[in-house]
Length: 371
Image (cartoon, rainbow, N blue to C red; front, side):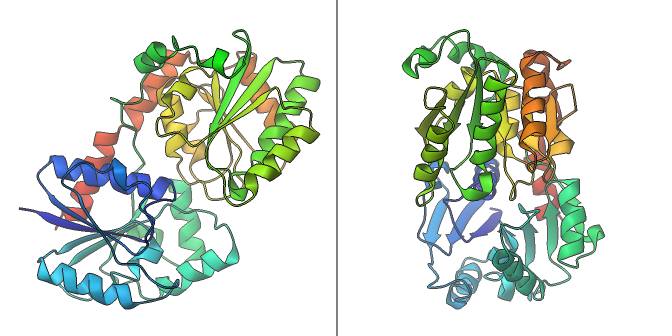
């Protein structure tokens, strides 16, 4: 039986972990034996693994506590696992000893383009020193590879580009049509004739909900558009209070609905008319955006990472800067006014054809497991 070890530093953060889970489930269905070693006690997303995926926590006490690396090395050798997949460059430090042995094939996937802060950048820059030339590197967008090559001093030729993928059985136009019959708008006190904008993202500072709030004020005041927003995602620290305060100051209490984290975001996508991301960092190739567009929603994304690799301007949405609220609001207004050329059904078909999950996972399997 083929075996693969996944190394992660957290199972409760975001896109990188979601990507790992989807890939692990795919390999499990193909008959692989899957072991996930998490150097953290956060298993928030672990419930998404299919039965048969084994998860072991080997928690580190601080960021560069290398003790888990020795335990991971020991477990991999005991179980004779020679294929190791790290969900970030930071996770690689815990597989470094395995990468030194010729029999082992170690892959690292990157889900970062612009770093949140200098500390996170310096962490990766430090780990990069230990990057063995034999380690296989994966990028999820062309813009990301270009950027990381520059800031981490790694040749772009070392990277394999494999876009994130969307589960077309779970996110598609027909499911949106089915879920739209639910009376969710009434529950949220949103008029049936309103234009609803949804954002599925944790309420973290880097996700920049402030920009979305300011843009909605412009849409309602300057463009006279009957627009509402739904924010789906949980809070980090006091972020919810910060966002609620800004909503109140902009007199938007009736027009922005904070619904918290949801295991299934599809009902909120289904009752919405478009999707936005207003992030000022972090985004590389947003799975959340792919999910929304697979359900037929046009999208306005900030110009980060691979946004312009999934958005065809004026076709399925627009890309705008996160530094200018007026420009961002204008891009949203263009969607509301119907300036997109693709219908909702065509948007769904385009995204599913170009960024389909099985294709992504097959490409990953071939690269990670290949000779």
